[in-house]
Length: 149
Image 1 (cartoon, one colour):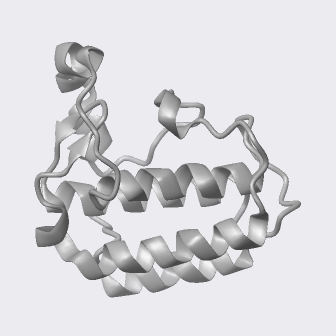
Image 2 (image 1 turned 120 degrees about the vertical axis):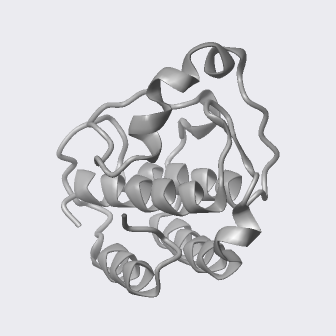
C-alpha cells in the first residue's frame, strides 16, 4: 500500500501539490482549493501528533465498523464526512497554505512510522505508524484528485 512515508510517494505528492492552482475547478465537494489545503494540513497536524486529539464517543461506538476501509487500500470515497475541527470556513491564503502543507508533509515523512505510532485519530482512535502513513497518503491523494492534480 502507498504510504506518505515512502520517499517516492512523498516526492510524487509534492509534485502534484506544486501543480495545484488556486482556481482549480473541484470535481466534487464544497471546498475551494485553499480550504482543501488548510483542511489537509490540519489532518497532518493531528497525524504527526502536533495537535492533541481524543477519540470521539461516536468513534468509540461505531469506528470499528469503518476502520478497515479507512486504513485499507481502497481510496477514500467522495463527499465523506469530516470532523468539525477540519471544516475550514474562511478562505486561507492559497500560496501560504500550500507552502505550509508542503512543509508539514515533509515533516511528517521525516518522522517515519515510529514517530507517529500511537497518535490518536479523532474518530478511529489510536493508529499505528504504518496506518498513519497509509491514511495520510490516501487523504492527500483524495483531495488532490478532487481538484484534478
